[in-house]
Length: 354
Image (tube, rainbow, N blue to C red):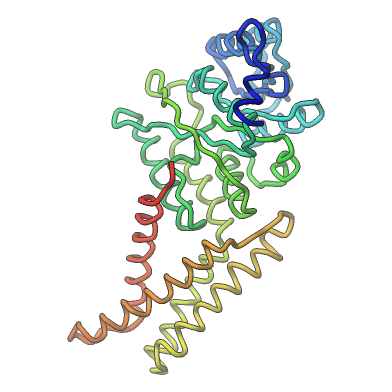
Protein backbone atom coordinates (compact mmCIF):
# COMPACT_ATOMS: atom_id res chain seq x y z
CA UNK A 1 0.00 0.00 0.00
CA UNK A 2 1.45 3.35 -1.04
CA UNK A 3 1.42 6.62 0.87
CA UNK A 4 -1.56 7.70 -1.27
CA UNK A 5 -3.39 4.55 -0.24
CA UNK A 6 -2.72 5.38 3.42
CA UNK A 7 -4.11 8.86 2.86
CA UNK A 8 -7.36 7.27 1.71
CA UNK A 9 -7.59 5.39 5.02
CA UNK A 10 -7.52 8.55 7.13
CA UNK A 11 -10.90 8.96 8.72
CA UNK A 12 -12.82 12.20 9.17
CA UNK A 13 -11.37 12.44 12.68
CA UNK A 14 -7.89 12.57 11.18
CA UNK A 15 -6.85 9.09 12.43
CA UNK A 16 -5.37 6.41 10.18
CA UNK A 17 -7.35 3.18 9.91
CA UNK A 18 -5.12 0.54 11.53
CA UNK A 19 -7.74 -2.22 11.41
CA UNK A 20 -5.32 -4.52 9.52
CA UNK A 21 -2.55 -4.07 12.11
CA UNK A 22 -2.03 -5.63 15.53
CA UNK A 23 0.71 -4.85 18.03
CA UNK A 24 2.21 -7.93 19.70
CA UNK A 25 3.79 -7.36 23.11
CA UNK A 26 5.64 -10.17 24.93
CA UNK A 27 5.49 -9.37 28.64
CA UNK A 28 7.31 -10.78 31.64
CA UNK A 29 6.61 -9.15 35.00
CA UNK A 30 5.45 -5.86 33.45
CA UNK A 31 5.04 -2.58 35.29
CA UNK A 32 2.52 0.28 34.91
CA UNK A 33 4.25 1.40 31.71
CA UNK A 34 2.53 -1.47 29.90
CA UNK A 35 -0.90 -0.11 30.86
CA UNK A 36 0.13 3.35 29.65
CA UNK A 37 1.38 1.87 26.35
CA UNK A 38 -1.90 0.02 25.76
CA UNK A 39 -3.87 3.16 26.51
CA UNK A 40 -1.80 5.14 24.00
CA UNK A 41 -2.06 2.46 21.32
CA UNK A 42 -5.81 2.12 21.72
CA UNK A 43 -6.04 5.90 21.45
CA UNK A 44 -4.36 5.62 18.04
CA UNK A 45 -6.82 2.90 16.99
CA UNK A 46 -4.29 0.06 17.20
CA UNK A 47 -5.27 -3.40 18.46
CA UNK A 48 -2.87 -5.07 20.87
CA UNK A 49 -2.14 -8.67 21.86
CA UNK A 50 -0.16 -9.21 25.07
CA UNK A 51 1.58 -12.49 25.81
CA UNK A 52 1.93 -13.12 29.55
CA UNK A 53 5.23 -15.02 29.64
CA UNK A 54 4.63 -16.72 33.00
CA UNK A 55 4.74 -13.51 35.05
CA UNK A 56 2.93 -14.98 38.03
CA UNK A 57 -0.38 -14.17 39.80
CA UNK A 58 0.97 -10.96 41.37
CA UNK A 59 0.99 -9.33 37.93
CA UNK A 60 -2.56 -10.28 37.04
CA UNK A 61 -3.81 -6.80 38.03
CA UNK A 62 -1.60 -5.22 35.34
CA UNK A 63 -2.92 -7.61 32.70
CA UNK A 64 -6.49 -7.07 33.91
CA UNK A 65 -6.13 -3.31 33.43
CA UNK A 66 -4.85 -3.95 29.89
CA UNK A 67 -7.89 -6.14 29.15
CA UNK A 68 -10.19 -3.38 30.35
CA UNK A 69 -8.51 -1.04 27.85
CA UNK A 70 -9.32 -3.48 25.03
CA UNK A 71 -6.12 -5.52 24.69
CA UNK A 72 -6.21 -9.28 24.15
CA UNK A 73 -4.15 -11.13 26.76
CA UNK A 74 -2.93 -14.66 26.19
CA UNK A 75 -0.10 -16.64 27.75
CA UNK A 76 0.94 -19.51 30.00
CA UNK A 77 1.98 -20.15 33.60
CA UNK A 78 5.73 -20.87 33.33
CA UNK A 79 8.27 -18.32 32.07
CA UNK A 80 9.72 -19.61 28.79
CA UNK A 81 11.58 -16.61 27.35
CA UNK A 82 10.95 -13.80 24.91
CA UNK A 83 11.37 -15.94 21.79
CA UNK A 84 8.80 -18.44 23.01
CA UNK A 85 6.42 -15.61 23.88
CA UNK A 86 6.78 -14.12 20.39
CA UNK A 87 6.09 -17.48 18.75
CA UNK A 88 3.06 -17.98 20.98
CA UNK A 89 1.85 -14.53 20.02
CA UNK A 90 2.46 -15.12 16.30
CA UNK A 91 0.33 -18.28 16.47
CA UNK A 92 -2.39 -16.31 18.24
CA UNK A 93 -2.25 -13.51 15.66
CA UNK A 94 -2.24 -15.96 12.74
CA UNK A 95 -5.68 -17.17 13.81
CA UNK A 96 -7.01 -13.62 13.55
CA UNK A 97 -7.76 -11.58 10.44
CA UNK A 98 -4.76 -9.23 10.52
CA UNK A 99 -2.47 -8.38 7.62
CA UNK A 100 0.39 -6.89 9.63
CA UNK A 101 1.91 -7.44 13.07
CA UNK A 102 4.19 -5.04 14.93
CA UNK A 103 6.24 -6.38 17.85
CA UNK A 104 7.04 -4.07 20.76
CA UNK A 105 8.63 -4.35 24.19
CA UNK A 106 6.54 -3.80 27.30
CA UNK A 107 8.97 -1.68 29.33
CA UNK A 108 8.40 1.73 27.76
CA UNK A 109 11.39 1.65 25.38
CA UNK A 110 9.20 2.15 22.32
CA UNK A 111 7.16 5.29 21.79
CA UNK A 112 3.58 4.89 20.48
CA UNK A 113 4.36 7.26 17.61
CA UNK A 114 7.28 5.03 16.53
CA UNK A 115 5.02 1.98 16.69
CA UNK A 116 2.60 3.84 14.42
CA UNK A 117 5.44 4.67 12.03
CA UNK A 118 6.32 0.96 11.75
CA UNK A 119 2.66 0.16 11.07
CA UNK A 120 2.53 2.82 8.36
CA UNK A 121 5.74 1.48 6.80
CA UNK A 122 4.10 -1.95 6.55
CA UNK A 123 0.92 -0.48 5.11
CA UNK A 124 3.06 1.31 2.51
CA UNK A 125 4.06 -2.04 1.04
CA UNK A 126 7.08 -3.20 3.07
CA UNK A 127 7.21 -6.88 4.00
CA UNK A 128 9.61 -6.62 6.96
CA UNK A 129 10.46 -3.44 8.86
CA UNK A 130 13.29 -3.11 11.38
CA UNK A 131 13.80 -0.06 13.54
CA UNK A 132 17.22 1.50 14.01
CA UNK A 133 17.85 2.96 17.43
CA UNK A 134 20.15 5.93 17.75
CA UNK A 135 22.56 4.38 20.26
CA UNK A 136 24.13 7.34 22.06
CA UNK A 137 27.25 7.45 24.23
CA UNK A 138 25.10 7.66 27.36
CA UNK A 139 23.28 4.43 26.48
CA UNK A 140 23.87 1.45 28.83
CA UNK A 141 27.26 -0.17 28.18
CA UNK A 142 25.67 -3.60 27.61
CA UNK A 143 23.49 -2.12 24.87
CA UNK A 144 26.41 -0.48 23.08
CA UNK A 145 28.64 -3.58 23.24
CA UNK A 146 25.83 -5.93 22.23
CA UNK A 147 24.83 -3.83 19.23
CA UNK A 148 28.42 -3.41 18.02
CA UNK A 149 29.10 -7.16 18.14
CA UNK A 150 25.80 -7.99 16.52
CA UNK A 151 26.33 -5.52 13.65
CA UNK A 152 29.80 -6.90 12.92
CA UNK A 153 28.93 -10.60 12.91
CA UNK A 154 25.71 -10.08 10.99
CA UNK A 155 27.53 -8.12 8.27
CA UNK A 156 30.24 -10.77 7.91
CA UNK A 157 27.75 -13.65 7.77
CA UNK A 158 25.30 -12.07 5.34
CA UNK A 159 27.35 -9.58 3.31
CA UNK A 160 24.94 -6.90 4.49
CA UNK A 161 25.22 -4.18 7.10
CA UNK A 162 22.25 -3.50 9.35
CA UNK A 163 22.86 -0.75 11.90
CA UNK A 164 20.58 -2.38 14.46
CA UNK A 165 19.36 -5.97 14.32
CA UNK A 166 18.39 -6.31 17.98
CA UNK A 167 15.67 -3.69 18.39
CA UNK A 168 12.46 -5.27 19.65
CA UNK A 169 10.30 -2.85 17.64
CA UNK A 170 9.72 -4.58 14.32
CA UNK A 171 7.02 -5.05 11.74
CA UNK A 172 6.04 -8.06 9.63
CA UNK A 173 3.40 -8.90 7.11
CA UNK A 174 1.54 -11.82 8.68
CA UNK A 175 2.39 -13.88 5.59
CA UNK A 176 5.83 -14.31 7.23
CA UNK A 177 4.46 -16.01 10.34
CA UNK A 178 4.60 -19.50 8.86
CA UNK A 179 8.38 -19.47 8.43
CA UNK A 180 9.04 -17.38 11.55
CA UNK A 181 7.45 -20.10 13.68
CA UNK A 182 10.10 -22.52 12.36
CA UNK A 183 13.03 -20.34 13.45
CA UNK A 184 15.03 -21.73 16.36
CA UNK A 185 15.36 -19.93 19.67
CA UNK A 186 13.16 -19.53 22.72
CA UNK A 187 14.75 -16.53 24.41
CA UNK A 188 16.48 -13.31 23.25
CA UNK A 189 18.34 -15.23 20.55
CA UNK A 190 15.12 -15.69 18.57
CA UNK A 191 14.95 -12.08 17.39
CA UNK A 192 18.43 -12.15 15.85
CA UNK A 193 17.75 -15.54 14.29
CA UNK A 194 14.61 -14.19 12.59
CA UNK A 195 16.64 -11.45 10.92
CA UNK A 196 19.31 -13.97 9.90
CA UNK A 197 16.72 -16.26 8.33
CA UNK A 198 15.03 -13.39 6.55
CA UNK A 199 18.36 -12.40 5.03
CA UNK A 200 19.18 -15.98 4.01
CA UNK A 201 15.86 -16.11 2.17
CA UNK A 202 16.67 -12.92 0.30
CA UNK A 203 13.68 -11.09 1.78
CA UNK A 204 13.66 -7.31 1.48
CA UNK A 205 14.17 -5.60 4.85
CA UNK A 206 13.24 -1.95 5.30
CA UNK A 207 14.64 0.15 8.16
CA UNK A 208 13.38 3.29 9.87
CA UNK A 209 15.16 5.32 12.58
CA UNK A 210 13.67 5.66 16.05
CA UNK A 211 14.73 7.24 19.31
CA UNK A 212 16.46 4.95 21.79
CA UNK A 213 14.82 5.24 25.21
CA UNK A 214 16.56 3.79 28.27
CA UNK A 215 14.50 4.43 31.39
CA UNK A 216 16.53 4.26 34.63
CA UNK A 217 19.45 2.77 32.68
CA UNK A 218 17.18 -0.05 31.46
CA UNK A 219 16.48 -1.13 35.03
CA UNK A 220 13.19 -2.82 34.07
CA UNK A 221 14.84 -4.99 31.41
CA UNK A 222 14.97 -8.72 32.15
CA UNK A 223 17.96 -9.17 29.82
CA UNK A 224 20.82 -10.89 31.66
CA UNK A 225 23.98 -9.40 30.12
CA UNK A 226 26.35 -12.38 30.38
CA UNK A 227 24.03 -15.36 30.14
CA UNK A 228 21.71 -14.00 27.43
CA UNK A 229 24.55 -12.55 25.34
CA UNK A 230 26.29 -15.94 25.34
CA UNK A 231 23.01 -17.62 24.40
CA UNK A 232 22.41 -15.20 21.53
CA UNK A 233 25.82 -15.83 20.01
CA UNK A 234 25.80 -19.58 20.60
CA UNK A 235 22.60 -19.78 18.54
CA UNK A 236 24.02 -17.28 16.09
CA UNK A 237 27.17 -19.36 15.55
CA UNK A 238 24.98 -22.39 14.90
CA UNK A 239 23.38 -20.57 11.98
CA UNK A 240 26.80 -19.91 10.41
CA UNK A 241 28.34 -23.29 11.25
CA UNK A 242 29.12 -23.97 7.60
CA UNK A 243 31.06 -20.73 7.25
CA UNK A 244 33.05 -21.52 10.40
CA UNK A 245 33.81 -25.06 9.19
CA UNK A 246 34.76 -23.71 5.76
CA UNK A 247 37.23 -21.29 7.35
CA UNK A 248 38.76 -24.07 9.46
CA UNK A 249 39.10 -26.34 6.40
CA UNK A 250 40.61 -23.43 4.47
CA UNK A 251 43.28 -22.89 7.15
CA UNK A 252 44.07 -26.62 7.32
CA UNK A 253 44.31 -26.74 3.53
CA UNK A 254 46.85 -23.91 3.52
CA UNK A 255 48.82 -25.62 6.30
CA UNK A 256 48.94 -29.01 4.55
CA UNK A 257 49.42 -27.97 0.94
CA UNK A 258 51.59 -24.89 1.39
CA UNK A 259 53.61 -25.40 4.56
CA UNK A 260 53.91 -29.20 4.46
CA UNK A 261 53.65 -30.26 0.81
CA UNK A 262 54.87 -26.92 -0.63
CA UNK A 263 52.28 -26.87 -3.41
CA UNK A 264 51.76 -23.64 -5.41
CA UNK A 265 49.48 -21.38 -3.40
CA UNK A 266 47.38 -19.81 -6.13
CA UNK A 267 46.84 -22.68 -8.53
CA UNK A 268 45.76 -25.24 -5.96
CA UNK A 269 44.95 -23.76 -2.60
CA UNK A 270 43.06 -20.60 -3.55
CA UNK A 271 40.75 -22.35 -6.00
CA UNK A 272 40.33 -25.38 -3.72
CA UNK A 273 39.47 -23.24 -0.73
CA UNK A 274 36.91 -21.25 -2.67
CA UNK A 275 35.25 -24.48 -3.85
CA UNK A 276 35.16 -25.71 -0.25
CA UNK A 277 33.50 -22.43 0.76
CA UNK A 278 30.90 -22.82 -2.00
CA UNK A 279 30.24 -26.43 -1.09
CA UNK A 280 29.74 -25.80 2.61
CA UNK A 281 28.17 -22.34 2.61
CA UNK A 282 25.89 -22.70 -0.40
CA UNK A 283 25.11 -26.37 -1.05
CA UNK A 284 25.04 -27.68 2.53
CA UNK A 285 23.27 -24.56 3.80
CA UNK A 286 20.63 -24.99 1.12
CA UNK A 287 19.95 -28.69 1.62
CA UNK A 288 20.76 -29.27 5.31
CA UNK A 289 20.95 -26.17 7.52
CA UNK A 290 18.12 -24.21 5.88
CA UNK A 291 16.20 -27.06 4.30
CA UNK A 292 12.93 -25.93 5.93
CA UNK A 293 13.26 -22.41 4.50
CA UNK A 294 13.38 -20.88 1.08
CA UNK A 295 17.12 -20.24 0.65
CA UNK A 296 19.08 -18.10 -1.76
CA UNK A 297 22.84 -17.49 -1.50
CA UNK A 298 22.50 -14.13 -3.24
CA UNK A 299 24.65 -12.57 -5.94
CA UNK A 300 26.15 -10.17 -3.38
CA UNK A 301 27.49 -12.98 -1.18
CA UNK A 302 28.86 -14.83 -4.21
CA UNK A 303 30.62 -11.74 -5.58
CA UNK A 304 32.09 -10.85 -2.21
CA UNK A 305 33.35 -14.39 -1.68
CA UNK A 306 35.23 -14.25 -5.01
CA UNK A 307 36.69 -10.85 -4.15
CA UNK A 308 37.75 -12.03 -0.70
CA UNK A 309 39.58 -15.13 -1.92
CA UNK A 310 41.44 -13.10 -4.56
CA UNK A 311 42.39 -10.65 -1.80
CA UNK A 312 43.63 -13.50 0.42
CA UNK A 313 45.90 -14.63 -2.39
CA UNK A 314 47.24 -11.14 -3.15
CA UNK A 315 47.97 -10.37 0.51
CA UNK A 316 49.74 -13.69 1.02
CA UNK A 317 51.83 -13.34 -2.13
CA UNK A 318 52.82 -9.76 -1.31
CA UNK A 319 53.79 -10.78 2.22
CA UNK A 320 55.93 -13.63 0.94
CA UNK A 321 57.82 -11.38 -1.49
CA UNK A 322 58.11 -8.27 0.69
CA UNK A 323 58.84 -9.72 4.13
CA UNK A 324 62.37 -11.14 4.30
CA UNK A 325 61.71 -13.32 7.35
CA UNK A 326 60.57 -16.88 6.63
CA UNK A 327 57.04 -17.11 8.04
CA UNK A 328 54.64 -20.02 7.39
CA UNK A 329 52.01 -19.33 4.74
CA UNK A 330 49.32 -20.33 7.25
CA UNK A 331 50.18 -17.31 9.40
CA UNK A 332 49.88 -15.00 6.39
CA UNK A 333 46.58 -16.61 5.47
CA UNK A 334 45.04 -16.20 8.93
CA UNK A 335 46.17 -12.57 9.08
CA UNK A 336 44.77 -11.92 5.60
CA UNK A 337 41.40 -13.38 6.63
CA UNK A 338 41.26 -11.09 9.68
CA UNK A 339 42.23 -8.04 7.62
CA UNK A 340 39.72 -8.76 4.84
CA UNK A 341 36.82 -9.49 7.23
CA UNK A 342 37.37 -6.16 8.99
CA UNK A 343 37.70 -4.39 5.63
CA UNK A 344 34.48 -6.06 4.40
CA UNK A 345 32.61 -4.83 7.46
CA UNK A 346 33.89 -1.27 7.02
CA UNK A 347 33.00 -1.35 3.31
CA UNK A 348 29.48 -2.63 3.98
CA UNK A 349 29.01 -0.01 6.68
CA UNK A 350 30.29 2.79 4.45
CA UNK A 351 28.01 1.77 1.58
CA UNK A 352 24.91 1.20 3.74
CA UNK A 353 21.94 2.88 2.13
CA UNK A 354 19.97 4.61 4.87
